[in-house]
Image 1 (tube, rainbow, N blue to C red):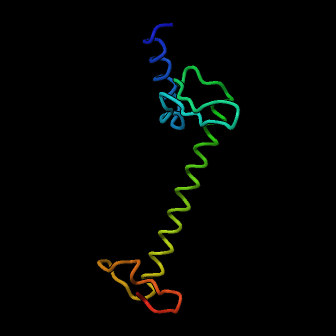
Image 2 (cartoon, helix red, strand yellow; image 1 turned 60 degrees about the vertical axis):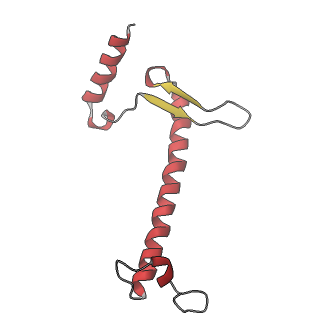
Image 3 (spheres, one colour; image 1 turned 120 degrees about the vertical axis):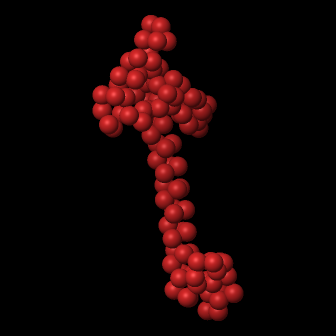
Length: 102
């Protein structure tokens, strides 16, 4: 199979469904303890297991991003509740343990 055939098949697959339009060229497979090193494989060669492990890695990253979003939202809300406005330093507006804003 030539590179043109693979590219054409991948392009056709991406165009076949909106949910496949963001299909990556490569898949990052995280390392697994005592089993294998991290790897990046072309989408045309990944196994179902590779995809499953890649999904687990992406889910971990996604959860970390959502935790960060939640923490920043909480800081924002806390600062706004003390009367802070847009140009104020959020961290300074949040009360310390004694209840005073810094």
